[in-house]
Length: 79
Image (cartoon, rainbow, N blue to C red; front, side, top):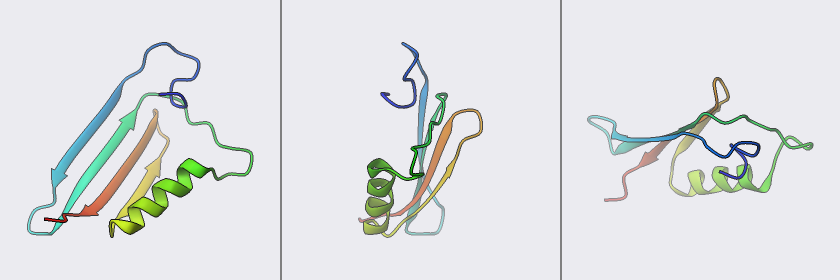
């Protein structure tokens, strides 16, 4: 909320979680209607943390910035 909607008092966040059929994986998709602001160095502690946690969960992450910010995680189900 702090970063996505820094100059607004309201915003919309969507979260979708769905199993990928016939696999041991599921998709976790986060979307918001905020505005992406890159850091001066191009990387941040938050982005490093997302990458590290995704790796620890044997997953993959894609990030896009069209009409807000979207993260799509493919994560292994730890049954």
